[in-house]
Amino acid sequence: MREVRLIDENGKQLGIYPTREALYVAMERGLDLVEVSPDARPPVCRLMDYGKFMYEQSRREREARKAQKQIEVKEIQVRPKTAEHDVGFKLDRARKFLAEGNKIRVRVRFRGREITHADLAVELMQRVAEELADVSTVEQTPRMEGRSMIMMLTPSLKVAEQA
Image 1: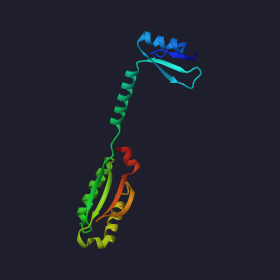
Image 2 (image 1 turned 90 degrees about the vertical axis):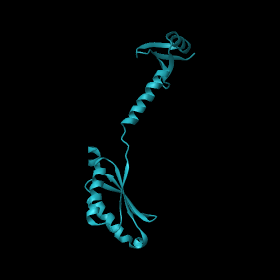
Image 3 (image 1 turned 180 degrees about the horizontal axis):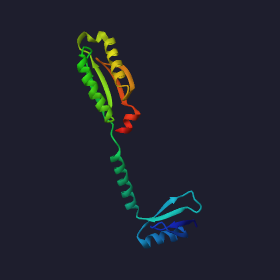
Image 4 (image 1 turned 180 degrees about the vertical axis):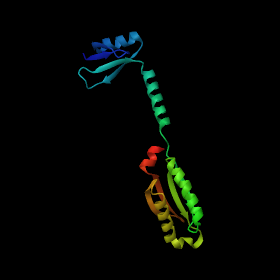
C-alpha cells in the first residue's frame, strides 16, 4: 500500500499516512485530498477545499489580466501632397500617442495618379521616422498595401517605461 506525506489545511505537517487513512482524514474534515508533489518520496498530499482553491486561482488570474496594459495601434494618415504644417500637427499627435505607450501605424494614402510617385511617400515616411526617432523605433519599414503605403512605429524603451 502506498503512503503519502500529509499536510493539513493550515500548512502543518501531519506525518506519513497510508493513502486510505489520508482519504479518511480528509473526509472527516470535509476537505479534499490533493496531491501536491507526486515526484517526492513519499508523495506529498494536502488537505484543502479544492473548489475554493480553484475559485481563488481563477480570481487571481482575472486580476492579473486586468492589471495588464492593452497596447493599442493608433493610425496617422497623410497624403503625398499634405502641407508641412499639417504633417507637423500629425507628428505632434503621434508623439502624444507614443508617450501613452501606443503603437503608431503611419499610412500614406494615394489617390488617382499619385501612386506613380511612391518615392514622395517614402521620403515622407523617412522624415516621420527621423522626427519621431527620439520617442520611437521603426517596427515595420514602409511597404505598399493596396493604394497606400504603411509603416509601423513602436514606443522606444525609455518612453514605454515612463508610460
